Every structure is written in structure tokens, then in C-alpha cells.
Length: 367
Image (tube, rainbow, N blue to C red):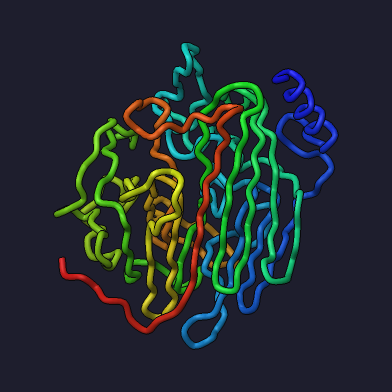
């Protein structure tokens, strides 16, 4: 029965135009979703979020996602602006792991480690559009991708879908994956760079952030987890109560800012819980992120430098916030971390629900 299922899946891939993880027929293009004052643009290159336009507290529209002016720039992108990242996002130490007694060697693309799935990953791939509803009560688009057995060194064929669903004041990103013939690690994320003041408004040091994680995963000098956890209390990583991003960022010289994985409190991989809230005082925009993921990577665009983006604006370090809901980095090499292994019997689902609103002020807690 299993063999019949595998054959049917492979027949579906062939008939759908999948060839070695890419689609030959579909051109690279932009797709737009609109719902009231919200509008979103995505591209089938990397299932990438290109822009998100919404009003500020005065009703003025602005784009809050960093990105490029042309599709050609996304093809050559090294910043992962808005990209869907996989098969395993974040880092895998030593670019290797052992699963069920078999040792797998991956392609290293950050020193001796693998970052964001490898040099190609899911970011530099053409996805297939399987559903597109531009307007209506819940406009949406769904992309699909076939990651083939051995791609970047990972085992097994994997069918992946990413859906963007636009509400009147929300964005829901749903990432799913199904292993066809072998167990494999999976950790999909959306790598949007957010600036609630508008993508071209400069740095995010005055934005207020709250993260519902009381611990972080400790890392070595190469940002690979050690397997241990640390409390955020009394450290620059403490955002349990709302704090201004720039207040303590200069206490982190090694990474030039924030770049750490938070252990989300109460996360069990199933329930949708609030992970983070961001407020921009000048625009009044508020973004609340909820997820079923165990972790959240908080990154302040520390190494974005002289990156020419939309409208000719040049992005610099600390010009955006990345709040990537995710599994813990290098989970496949740490048995004490929540498992990222997906099997034919156990599919993968990652939900990132983002709600937008406006308010004049946001209470800052004293340090």
C-alpha cells in the first residue's frame, strides 16, 4: 500500500510539472492580494513576501516590509528578504546529522555549517502556484514545491506548500510539508524584514518589542546551539515586558545586535499562542505575532549593509526586525530539543498569524 502511495505521489509531481525541485513552465512573477486597506505582494521565486502595505494611525498607507525593486534582485539575493526558508531554516552545526543510524552530510554555506537549508535551499527556487484568489473576504495564494531526495544533502522527497491569507487587519502564513518516502528534518520559516515605520524610514531602534520567551538557546561563537538554555532575566535579551529595541542593543557587540532564538513560553507545537508584539510610536502601527512553533528568532538586520532596495532606498544595519517563528536551530543534533523530524505518517504544519492595529502609545516597562 505504501509503495502505491509513493508511486501516486511521484506521478502527481511529474504531471504537475515538477522537475528536480523546480518548475520549468511558470515564469517568475509578482502576485497581489487585496483586502480593504491592506495589500500584499508575493513572488513565486522563493515563495517570497515582497511588500505589505497598510495604514498608519493617520490613515496614511505605507509598505512595512524591506525588499528589492526588481525580481532580478531577488534571484541574486543573499539577505533572504521575505523568503520562505527551508528545508531546515537557521543553522545545522558541522553541516551534518545522523538519523535512524544513517549519517547525512549537507552542503556547508556558512563556514563549516549549513545556514537556511544550504546555498540554494527553498529560497532560490521557483515555486508553483496551486491556488490564487486575489480579492474577496479572505484573499489567498498557495505555492507548492517538491524538494527531491538528496537535495542539499537532505534525505527523502518532500512536498511543501506555503499559503498567504490576507484578512482585513491580518496576515496568516501557513507552511506545510509531507515526507513521501523517508524521515527528514523540516523547519520552514518566513524571513520577512519588518519596519513598522515604513521600509524606508531608517532604523528600528525606537520600536518597542515584547517577546513571550523567558529563555534563549545558548550558542557558541559560530551561533550553533550548545544544547543548553539561559534565562533572559537581567540580560539585554529580556523582552518579557515591552522594551525599546535600542536601549540595550549596544551591549551585544559580538553580533552587532540581536540574533538569538527565544524559547516561547508554553509552546507545545500545536496551540496557537502569542509570540511577540511590536509597536512603532511614530506611525502608531502595532504587529502581534502568534504561532504554534516552539521558538522565535529575533534578528535586527545586523549585517544588512548598503543593500539597495525598493524605491532606491539603501538599507543599513538595524533597519528592520526579523521575528521568525521556528523550531530551535540545530534541533536535529540535540535530542533534548523538540523534534523536527517529519515522516510519511507525521506531516509538518507551521502557522504564523500576524494581526495589525494602531494605537498612539505603548507602555514601556522600566529596566
